[in-house]
Image (tube, rainbow, N blue to C red; front, side, top):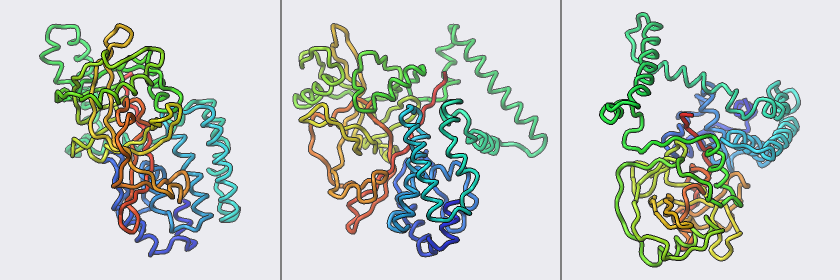
Length: 413
């Protein structure tokens, strides 16, 4: 509705729409996010709900920066920030208060910019969204994306266009039968032979995790929550294929610094560490896959946002973009017990001097300049906040605008 209003009022001209299409075609984003259809000037009226969500959260600020007037852009920025907060898998009451204040400011700004006649009933209902979330829980509980996804899933079923309802039910009943059969076989001697036939994640070591684990893991991605003492490790799924490698002395020193932040109550030194590691090109955290530079097929999901610990001040944190070079598992003696953790070897992008040119919601970083290696280059994978999409900008194409991609959690429990 807002996009249509911009077009009708001439805020976005046909030339602006061409620029937006060009920017969207150059966005580097993970393939599982979904792309905005081409020819946005004619297709925006038929976007699906999921496409509007992707446009709002991941693409719009980069596509619109420098095109919208400053007041219009700041108004839209508030709505984008609200969507990013509410779409998170884990939301606190403080987040809810911030989202409610931003929504109210957005509605006031919209009314001031476009006159009260353009304010819709849904915008009024925004002011009651906080109460709905407090009463019914996170927005994922009652939003309607699942209905749209089911329509898409049904559309992918192969039928002969005769008796479609019966064919749908046969497929559903067959799926339920396979699930029951898998549970039955799990307690028999045939499971090792036949169990792989029911495995949806072939090539991955699939592990279960509880909702308690989910909350703990998500909290570790935020500053002030770096104690790993009670973490079981069931949230990370590793590929079955790996390479054996060895850390040198400098790497062990860097890794020791990471371990000391993870286990602050334990006295550690290099003698507790083994030099052998298992390297992986990608991993899955809580069901979401993260790639690395070492796997060209998943290179788009190798760029992540994480809290970088200052090499000179362990209490100083900054959410920054980095590129994952590879993942590795390492075993160390922690409190007389052998504990295995999964780390990411990362390269941090260098900060651009005018980082907040377009505001906090759309930051600018160098895309081909990096920080020097330090203890922060070895990072526990739990510190990954999210992936991000990026659009290349700058006169020499050496800058990137980054937009965080909302975390997804896929659980069987």
